[in-house]
Image 1 (tube, chains in turn yellow, brown):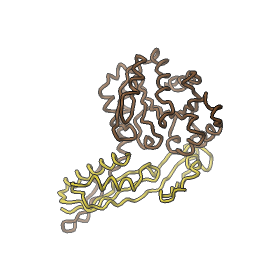
Image 2 (cartoon, rainbow over the protein chains, first blue to last red):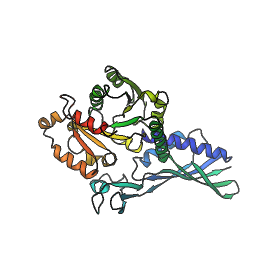
Image 3 (cartoon, chains in turn yellow, brown):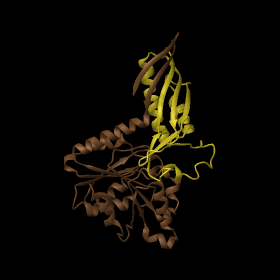
Image 4 (cartoon, rainbow over the protein chains, first blue to last red):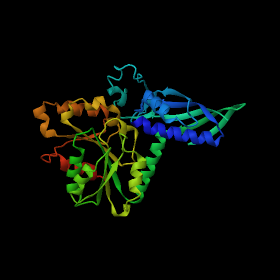
Length: 126
Length: 226
């Protein structure tokens, strides 16, 4: 339950920020999830709905946005966007090899973007 | 975590802009672990792999040799039981069982809670045996200096292409149970070729915990340059 642990930290942190700002309840939480993480948005939502019960976040909307991947080659510095199909398509990601070797020179790439799990904003009533 | 700005206060509804990254937070905790280890001259190696690839057997092989040369301690990660810790303790090597309960990976904070209890000035090497899983640990760096994946020929030849993320970040791969490759008809060269494509810098060793094949080479690779 990878998502459960991380979502519980999100709920705790948002609760703290909300209370620091005198919120009576939280209306919306904006969450950016990088497509190169192993976080499943569906699992995060499921965990969220369970974890917010009895907190000021209960009934709030969790608005998840996906951020696409960007990789850069260590050798030639070539940057390339990496598009990952969302899990609704079970046949996606069938040929992952080009993802991790540079398409120009075959070198090792580093992930520049796509590993986020970031709360970018919240809406509260105070 | 930074509360960057407060905007759009309309009546009693507020939009608050935030920048709180919960995976980056993991990365920062991992960096703090690395610094703590460096300050005490300790090397930490993270050992990952699916359930049943022989991680604990390989760690047993490593400590059997390394205990003569290094002050070594093993952290055994599992959901439950102290079976792995008990296997290490039998070699006269200190071991700490880290049970995660429901979590499918160790994280930097859990490792830190163990490191904080240890006298790091009396340790040279920490071997961390992660929870048996090839997926989740990829998102959770621990602060280790080197990362090793143990795969085994019993998993078949496709494991690297099916789990590219985790292999892309590895320093070493041990292809374990190599003594069974012929019996199982597994094409090891295909697996090696795939690994090199996913991660051109990875160092690959073919090992058997049954007859000890490849273990000295793996130890030389892992420890020789520390």
